[in-house]
Length: 340
Ligand code: NAD
Ligand code: DAU
Image (cartoon, rainbow, N blue to C red; front, side):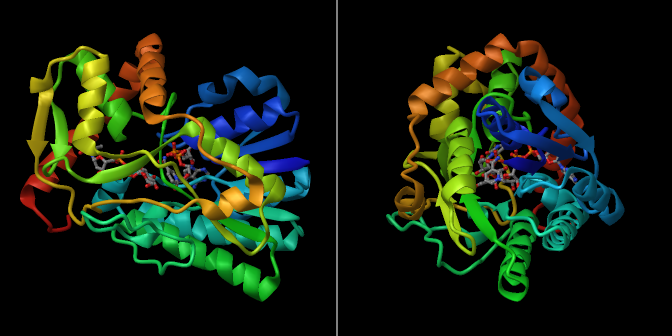
């Protein structure tokens, strides 16, 4: 099968590309190479993939890629993905996540793609309250709270419209928080590891009691591969683990593994509109494909910390790129809910 993978130089997209290439799939990868991309992530499979540098919102460039490669399937990861950046600058999220997805859908219909796998997020459902065991199911309403989540929910609506109006054989995947090697250190886990290495204060939003469900990136990539092969067109599938942790527990576990000083923890003003808890039901993907998450959080976190320690130079180089952004963000959050 020939697959066009968008966002393949990103964190999850590259894990998927490495896995699919190892299975011998023909991969045409397309990425705009934004600050979040790194071609090094797919270096291990570079001889067996083709790379196209293009913006998914650029109709002409994308049409040329579709017409020259004629893929059977599209697996669409490309997105602006950081919630804090969407609070500071929402416009790029509309352009890439909404216009970019709509552009790909139009071309997928034009070139009669046999399967379109759209990577969404559990954040489209909004958040869950404390002290309940509630979990999001695929039929729950979309109640996005951040500009990022709103842009992803809009993209999901466009996918739905192409399924209903044009009969596009598309499906939507909604993963929970991923972690693992190669994640850009603007996100909680690699940022904590980088700050612990440098002996810098770790900014914990609010009280640190917000809850996320952590899924090892290879488990996620594996689930997406299963859905590419066996997921039904027109359907939505959550992907997640049962590994719910408060942020403060995640940070403390990292500091424990690294034997770092707990005094590095610093509580800072909360992220505006901060979703409290995400948790997803995963029975549907399990029934459709047999998929289940395999890697327990303690094992995955240990592997992850050790990967970053072995790749310290990469981590600290990327961390130095985000310093200015984090400083501006903290100043903005200190001002409260007003937008800039
Ligand atoms: P990432 O930020 O690491 O990578 C995104 C990739 O998309 C980058 O390589 C970037 O260059 C590329 N990109 C951005 N704008 C583009 C454009 N206009 N045209 C072409 N390429 C562009 O993201 P990630 O964490 O790997 O997330 C991948 C997908 O999974 C996203 O759709 C995200 O919403 C979704 N998701 C992520 C998580 C998570 O925890 N990381 C969880 C659930 C869902
Ligand atoms: O749930 C899936 C989503 O998970 C994906 O769709 C997003 O693309 C991905 O970025 C992630 O969003 P989160 O906002 O949950 O991830 P982040 O790593 O930014 O933050 C995780 C939690 O940690 C969140 O409650 C905010 C908190 N946090 C984060 C940072 C960066 C802090 O307390 N301090 C920080 O410095």
